[in-house]
Image (cartoon, rainbow, N blue to C red; front, side, top):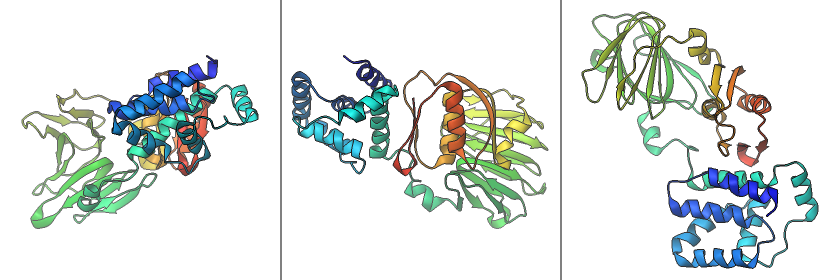
Length: 337
């Protein structure tokens, strides 16, 4: 087996989908991108395809994304085994760059993301519920009815309730900064996935990413409580950050405020963070999938200070640091391996 083919299959194994049928379809999709395909492999593919209608449907869903020539080639090889392989000059040039096998796996992983529609559009429920929301790469300042100020980060959404003296904001997704006008008679409350924050006048951030909430206090005082089950409460002093998960509230940490609040000024500042963590953050600002293939790069530690209005430039710069190859595809997809 040629080295580029082995690398491609190794990268394919690094990507796993929770649905085993889709995962098997992805494996075959990558395998059939290698040309020529030997008769035994071709027969094994056909047997797998015929064994269950779901197999054929999953594979066809991948290969039918075919506005890109590379995906059309995959589909052609699958359904017409005698078709000639890609021109030798193309394969040779790709091999000389040392990424052809992994590129095929990366392309398949990106195609899978497109096929299942992961994180590409806000859900209908969010569109119907949110009073304010931002798209990827957008940041917006909002004046609240009580004269408090809200800065909504990228890909974020809030719902407001200021009726009959209430001051309540639900953070439905993403991150927000609150600069709250003091009013002891009417506490200001922010609820997120796992937490509720209560204040009378202060400035703080709340971020909710599905797995946890993080609250950072810039000035004043706040109390942070668990939503479910209620009861556990922590009082924060300026500079404290606490996280809330399904398991409870963390002990307060003391991050650098310049790092914690950099996003307000359109910067992303990070120090000695895993590359995968940094990529996760930059995804929120890009608006199209950024796919990190395999585990080789995920744990590399990086530091930096980048503008959030140009996440692609940040990705390219960080890729140079960790030795990643960047492939940019139509519709803004970025593949890293």
